[in-house]
Length: 63
Image 1 (cartoon, rainbow, N blue to C red):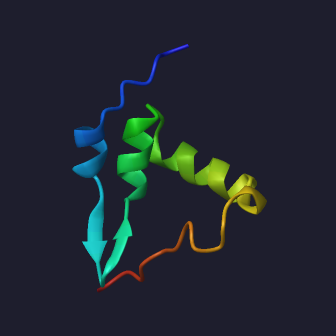
Image 2: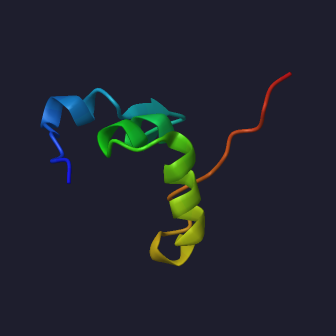
């Protein structure tokens, strides 16, 4: 099993302030846990009851 190498600066760099809300993008969370973005999203959807409803949302696509 691969050991997670997470430090405070690494996480701080991945937290974004958007509309006065702190958030992390799925790609950044996936990188921290050494999994693909698709896999992370699949697992969140599969286990949605374990997360608060504010945990995940999708931004609409802009054309």
